[in-house]
Length: 210
Image (tube, rainbow, N blue to C red; front, side, top):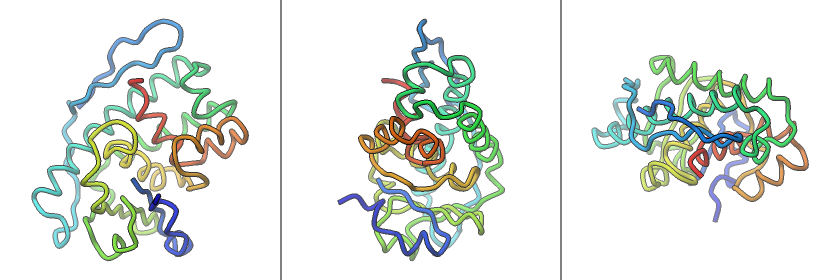
């Protein structure tokens, strides 16, 4: 079951949820994305909820946020240098490139300000089953058991989940559609909505290495 779809009540209450160190490297000609590294090169100091996050949780989250910073930088470079690449078209169709760039830039800027939001771990909102959630009004992001069980990179990964949640916090994206197949369909049929859908940004970043 896709737990991303279970939390309509939480979303209605202003909580946005999700289930589920890299310098830019040289890309190939023809619009192939630059490939982000798999280990972080960026250092990040997060503001944790001291009551909910263990030392182990903090280490896992710090790694994921550091890698997200680096991968988003690669994604931004790609959209700016090759805005009509197949990779961009796959996840955003004909959506305005200015809007996509705006969201990714907002994500990058907020990730670079880790003291401007609070990170919590496995708290009460996690009982509803998401991988993670965001409360934009409180500048709070929560990460749940599914997040800590996920892979660091790849589809529905910890790094991608950080990007998904940060797009909610930094750019107020919505959860119009979940899942790789559905979000690709959204980009083809409703590209303007895809440009405001958190999962499209997650998969755009997660698949830069494909």
